[in-house]
Length: 424
Image (cartoon, rainbow, N blue to C red; front, side):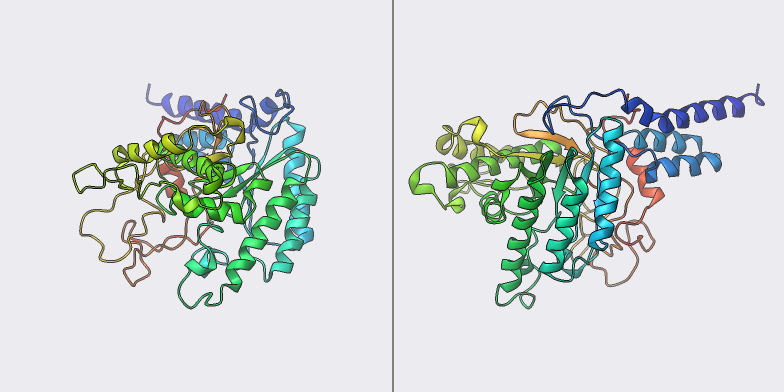
């Protein structure tokens, strides 16, 4: 009996990996829809993704459990990030991706991530050398998309983390921030000018900018020229929290542009995850809004019910949510472990894959749940503000931002909520 088990396991693994490798052929049976995103839209899975390669590596190493999980992971659509290169290089790479997706009748998800001054020169620093260079890069990106279907997420963190937010000496005159807003608007307009693109401008996450603040930034940066905005990219906050936050943002945008005349230009009047004038705010428990206590967000809902209940549904901006790592919600560091910033967003331990990518969300303003951050790619060499180079949560120097990290990929798959299965 013992001699048969390895053969049986090997046969199971081979069948599993064959399923993954054959997934492209399965996609070819799909029928393209008339709109870029509808509930029936199916997104593109790269059969040669890092997860697929990891599945083969695990199988060769005799790690059947992880190989199977990586094959399952690889069967689900993930975004492709474009982070560098000359205009000619990005045009060619984008064209190849959208062409591969078109041949199998699927819609690819792309991320444009090359804004000047990216990530405040931190873990994911880089970006184009100037606004002029960035505009050329975006022009080439759009040319690569051509007339094909594509969903494009524009510059994660680029709006929620403006140059003016990077520190008091980074942009004392405001010139860099103004350029950033102009660059983002240029990207949204240029990419949306392609006939079959859905364009979403990144807007951070529910635990970052207040509703009114990010709504104003979105308006300034041209969200009105695209399809909406993206939330939770590379983060792990719960899906329903971000859905609630995104709905508030959409209503705030309407309130300050199409709502009562006296409210025009006043996104700052909108309630948020931090404050609501509809709450008693009398000091009693639960009578004020707390960003970490969603039960108090009923006061935020109450403000929008009182002030934006007349907003027509078809005039509200839509959004997408990154669910690639939020299956177990946000990470709470052990009490008292860190005296400085624990970097809860950075390679948070114990997280899992979240809801599977789909355009059939059942939430009116949420166009799709997407795996925008590539599951298994590092956020950077996190140090939790300890002053050293070691990440105390893992006991190693984390891989650089964007590098493939097999141990993290395996953990995300094992901890997936709901349980990870094949995409069929």
